[in-house]
Amino acid sequence: MQDAMKPMPVYFVSHGGGPWPWVDGMREMFALTARELAALPARLPQKPKAVLMISGHWEATEFSVSGAALPGMEYDYFGFPPHTYQIRYPAPGSPALAARVQALLAEAGIACRVDPDRGLDHGAFVPMHLMYPQADVPLVLLSLKQGYDPALHIRVGQAIAGLRDEGVLIMGSGLTYHDMRGFGSDAATPVAQAFEQFLAQTLAEPDPVRRRERLVAWTEGPQARRAHPREDHLIPLMVAVGAAQDDMGRRFLLDHALKVDMGSYEFGGAKS
Image (tube, rainbow, N blue to C red; front, side, top):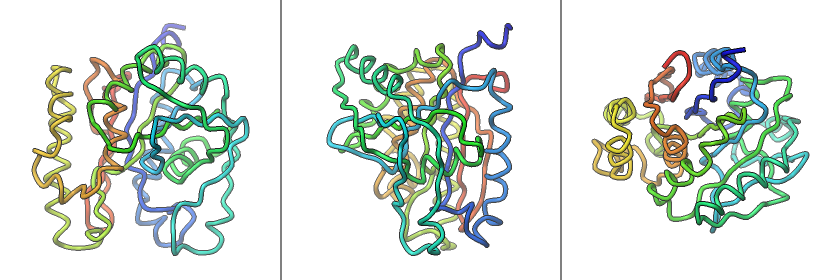
């Protein structure tokens, strides 16, 4: 019973490339990520009542939260085998959680709309398929806001942090390296390693104010703009850090695929 009273940890996961669990060759490439995400539920104090996912694959003109009771699918990738456009991940949504997120952001002075039509993109359904293959945990998505203001996204995380005490698992889903032209290049390896090390050191900073300051100034990190020419896959980390509050981060997974490092982080929890 004591563990059941603990707040949920917060996660940021590097979700890999496209619908890789369903693609021969890619599945083997990301075998470490598959194994660690499958084991992630065992790290939690209890099964979550729902997952709130902030995916790098959904941005909007204002913050938006998915409100469908039965969300559809968003096949937001190109050039993959035909069967990957038939994938289904039939997790229920949670209109009640969507309304709760909207209310919490409103209390913080942050506008948020409920989108009744938004489906699940691969930044959401790939990690969830690995974690909960039975699709028996409600899943709600929260968008990024265009402009990618890191301080604003940290504020969003802070506004929703109380959901951790309500049994909701908050997860950011992106990549710690995301230069589409760099994947598979020898030149990308030192870039990804340098920026990944910066993130690991920053997230392990024990002073939460200093931690957030370093993330707001992430472009000053080594190789920052080479690692993220466009920061859509980094900004979900800002929401996770805000939701983590005083909990520092630890890297629980470092995969190496397509010649780049891809880190995943845990904030709080028994193993932090």
